[in-house]
Length: 438
Image (tube, rainbow, N blue to C red; front, side):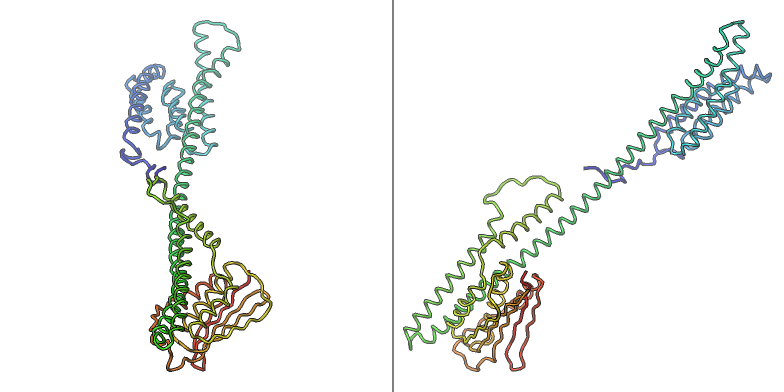
């Protein structure tokens, strides 16, 4: 993993315009060497110019020391080097100045213009000096030698530092671009990790809600019927033993069905994991979030593949409520057909929970279950009349957690349907739901 962009910014520990003390020491050292070089070259310049040698030395020291500002003002260093070229001094200053100028972020036209000026100045000085030397020593090497020597010397002094500086500058810019890209990728990975963690947390919350809803649907209805039958069994145990035996058998059936559905649900929950502890691998945060989201997705797929209730079991569901003493009337409209597994499960659970609520809050009330198969949707409605004041199951005292209607609404709206519930004008209660067929 790379560090962030702020970590790549060098700490400004040097004086003035230097970022680091090492750069300041290097520039000062180069300036000292250049000053001594120019001072030594200032002696013959002063002699040829007819001025005191001390003035030439001072001029050379001042000119050579300009190299100390090469990082801040590279143009000034190159201009000074070009200006002292006729005095045949500033060799080191010219090379270092051109290198610094070519490696800087200045526009290419400025770098090219100054490099051309330095090349032209060096060529003129070398041309004049070579001719003077040949004339003084009375050498005759041909007319081609003077321009050839001048061009070669000027190119040798100008081209290498310029090309090296351009290479170093391009490499530096490439490294900065790669570093910025790495920092950008790091930030993107952090964002992806945070989003993956958020998705994983959302998936965990959804899974907890789904499990709670399934547990409520499975347990509430079966156990409610068991409690109703147990209350009826207690009431008729001595008066009607045959009916008591029948109710006891129904209670057993309800319990076995509830256990079967609970085992199926636990099987789905266990199918996504592996038994036995194992060492936890070391993985990045993004991989953990993505793996958690994938596990939640696999659990959702397992849920869809698992066996569940469907509309064909609706008659059995109503028969169980009728066996518990409820008067239930079922009416079906439209042509019956098969739907997606999620649609049939949701429709079944809505009717199941509505009947459970009737057992809890309106025991003994007559109930109407209506199912309508439409072109692009399926509609269901469960409505009960006001409960009688005295009911054989009133002593059951069924508890209510208040989650039944919430769970039904969550199921229906998750499939893009509409859910409405509320009391009727006659004093009963109505639950209605419409679910898209696809």
